[in-house]
Length: 276
Length: 300
Image (tube, rainbow over all chains, first blue to last red; front, side, top):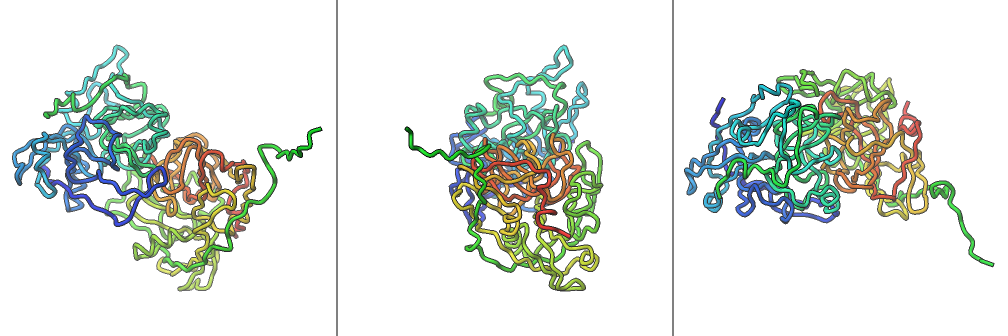
């Protein structure tokens, strides 16, 4: 089903106190909510003085029930239209989920969008199944992005998918234990030592990655021999320990059902041919 | 002739000296909570790890038949809280209750049929987007008399604890009483504490990224090494830091006490209340199958 869901550009909020980063320093950094006009999906994850950096526009609803519906029903690759304000008529694409639904717009729209501007999200994708891979659970993946991903069925009957990084289970942090469709799961890249140790320096927002020993079918958690495929949704080098780089789950199943192929670039900006 | 006198530490740098804390500096303060009652959404079903509906039971209120020292696994429930679960209805006061209460603190029932009865704080449990509970052990007679709504005073003592000569070690939710009973040992460069097991970092599930002072972290179902786990067990997790927040850190060691039972939900499992954490090399985990607070605190 394709549903029209009301949303609006959110506004940043602040708790009134410092958080503490992974070096033990008090931290007060932007990144979450509102409009980030100079970082977009496709850009590098780490070179920003930001915490939970949500690229582009963060869309939400003031009403909690409606916000939950938006959170669960919006899928990566969905179309979003600005329905009021100076940017009215601009069309964007859902590229991530966090506390908000993250939307990429052309730069001209990002330069004029403001908190409160009304949006319409055409939610399409929850319930999607792969007829050739009925055991693989699909989550928050639109038919549009599914068609755009360079997927192949191998001779052995596996699903071949390009990935930019492999992530071991011990790096999975905040987001474990939550619903598969809700927000994302953080990879604990909050300290330079961890980023370098696991070779993630070149990671980009929008990269497709594989998370090993992860079962993200009915919630998210550890399960040996399974894996999950996801898309990097938020970044920044600042970070609360235990949080980090958010990855939205799009698929999960037994490890042997997948053939992840590590490639130089596997990014939804290219797959969806997002406009400048 | 060489005149140097060598002092040989024995195996693993042991010098057999009790590690000391700043007990004389620590305040004793009063925080209160009321005995909770379980709460649920209109639709009671959660979805378990295999996609089956389950009704979670065990969080909040009074649990008569699950006690510290018993198995943390195998209950037909979700994160069962042993004994009495208390919280303060005023949200900021509940944060303070949950920050200040430490495992081993005295608790006193202040109202109802069990007024005057004393118990012991045995853990803290934070539920996602929900409750923060302090768990109190009462003896069986008192447990039969206490009801949801009864007020419980916690004589909070332990916040601000530091280990003498080892400033690298962060202390959380740990009372001087439990410290003395546990008797950590000062070693060359480190402090050794007794634990029932050392678990790998991938065991840490929901609770990653939370504030260490106030929270519990779920030991995820499905990770090797949880067999035989008991409520009250002192447990170490390698490559895990809980100095301020809870998260992965190569080489660090975090130690906690198992506060609540297993969960059928993915990413969840027995909740561990945090006690100690330090960077690589400053904390040693010494295996002892009896390292459980039921014995150390002589819970009746």
